[in-house]
Length: 157
Image (cartoon, rainbow, N blue to C red; front, side, top):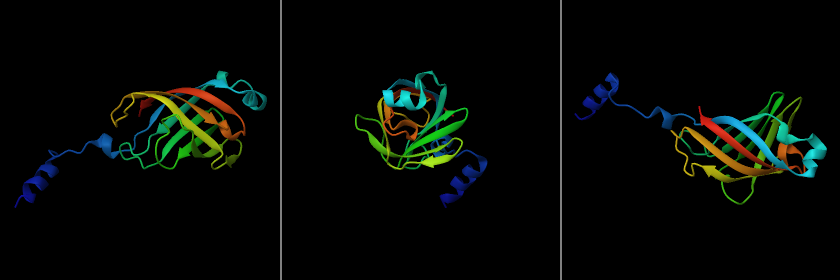
């Protein structure tokens, strides 16, 4: 039977599966607010001087589900922007589910909108070592009317 040799090869470790494709893929690195409107300044001060980090999980990459999730962290909290399916890359703002954890937890579903206006490389694969992207967020950090531009660099974990 043809299955016996395959089972034997698998037992010996000769048959391999690409572990990178079978695991969730996330990129972790720096997130910088590069510009903000006056509403952001009035609510939060100068966001361009804050040291943020980020994690992005791109939908349907490796074993990732369909959601694209961008999480932004500061020492005292985190915010998450999740697109249920599709891509954030393009010129169109996408409505995302927003949630945060600071001193309290909060959500504002559909209130935040995100777009990634450029991503390098343009095609991201499970073994891509790093990505760089720029974009915009409307209602940044759940604050109505606070719109920012950002740049980010992430390394494949």
